[in-house]
Each structure stands twice: as structure tokens, then as C-alpha cells.
Length: 115
Image (tube, rainbow, N blue to C red; front, side, top):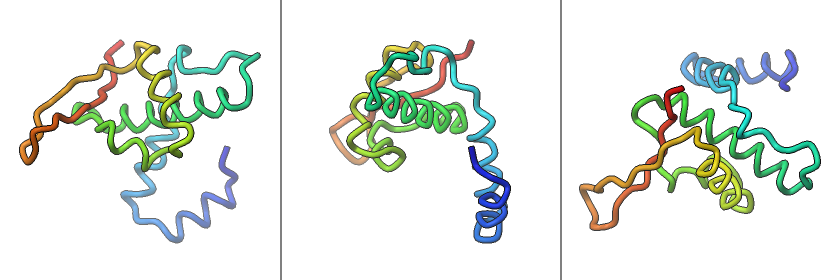
């Protein structure tokens, strides 16, 4: 949880768009399938936290979705693999493979599943 002081300091150094995006990310409610079990070890709890952050980014992106290759910039590389496994297994996101106009390699895009 971010304190009021931390939010005030960030607000001084942020644009209105950044502040609105930050508030939108904080308002996203993660589904139960993305919550860590109470007896999970610390490294799995961190991975579930990373999966929740990725899910928030996916929800805020709307129908555009988020590319898999962008995930490493959002969470640390050590938690990335576990977080993606958790997302894929949660049923909260849909994964699609789309053509990339400038390359033969396709894009892997995640979008939130409508409940």
C-alpha cells in the first residue's frame, strides 16, 4: 500500500496521464485465481504478486492487450516465468498469437477475459 506522503511526492513528479494510469492500475481487482495460497513459499508469493501486477496492466490496456515481450519490463526477470505460468493457468487472461508486420516471428498477446 502506498502512503499518502509517497503519493504526494510522486504526484509532484508525474504527469496527469501517469497519475491517472497509476490510479487505474491500483483500482484493478485481481481474481481469486491470482491470489497466492496462504501456505505458499516466499518465492511463489512474489510470483503471484507479479502475476497480479501483470493482470492489472492487461486489464488497463483494454482490447489492445499486452505483448508477452513487454512483460519483462513490468516485472523482474526472475519472477517472469512463474508469473506467466500463473497467468496462463488462472483462466483470467486469453493468449493469442498474432502476425507481426515487420517480422516472420509472431507476437504473443494477452488480453483480459470478460467475466
